[in-house]
Length: 351
Image (cartoon, rainbow, N blue to C red):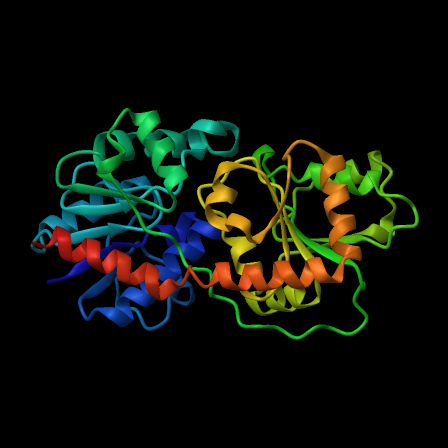
C-alpha cells in the first residue's frame, strides 16, 4: 500500500504549520516503508531529507492541489492521501487531513481571500465528508472546529504535535543577564504589543530586556518608540535558524507567550524542552498544553505581564521550579509520538 502525502505545503506554508508537516513526514517515512511525498515542481533543496519524493504536474497552487494531484492519484490506484497542512483536495477520497485551528474565521485579515475560500471549501465540502478523516492538534481546537462547522466533535481526531525538534544550544558570551525571549510575529492574535506595553511599565531601575525573534512585525519598533521603551530593553533579532534559536533559548531567563488564540502553540513547549521557564497568557489552549508548568497572566493586562516578568527575573527558586515543571511537561510531546498517532489513523483508514 502507498501512503501519498500532499506536498503543496512546501510552496505555501510557514512557521509552525511547516515545521509540523516536515517533522510528521520525516518520522512517518522512518516508521513506514510506503510513504511517498508528492510535490509540484520545486527547488530540490526544499524537500525533507530521507523522504521518497515524486514531482507531478505543472502548476504549484490551487490548480495543482485541486486538479493535478487528485487526477494523478486516481490514475495510480487511489491511495490514501495525507494532507498535513490545512488545505486538501475537495473531490478525492480516501484522505486524512489536519486542520490546526479556525484562524481563517477568527482572523480573516491575516489571510488572503483565496486562502480563506480554499480553506472553507476544503473543510466543509472535503474533509468532513464520508471517507475523509479530519485531525486537529488539541482538544480546544477540536471543540472550535466542531462548533464552527456544526459537526459532532467525535468525528474529529486529536493528535498532539511534538516539541522535541531543537537540540540544546550553547549560551553566547556577552548576553544580557535578564533577557526574555519573544516571537515578534505579525497578527493581532499574537498580542505582541502587550509585551511592549509591559516593558513600558517597568521601572527604570529594572534590568529586564526582551529579544524579539522570528519574522518580526514591522510595526513593533515604531510602536516601542511611541511607548517610550528605552532602546537598551529591546533587541530586534529577527529570523534565526533552529541552531540559533536553541542558542537564544539557552541564554534567556524566560520565554513570553502572550497569544490570544492558538491551535496548539509549539514555541512555549519547545522552550520548556530546553529548560526555559515560560510566562503565558491565561487562555484555554495554554491551560490545556502547559497545565501547571507555566506562570500565567491575563492576556490583555500588560501590568500583570510586567509583574510576572519582574517576579521571574528576581526569583531564582521560581525559575528553577518552572524549569523543572516545564521539562516534565514537554516530555509529553514528542514527534515520534505524533507519528505513531498518525500511523494508527492510517491503519484504521486502511481496514
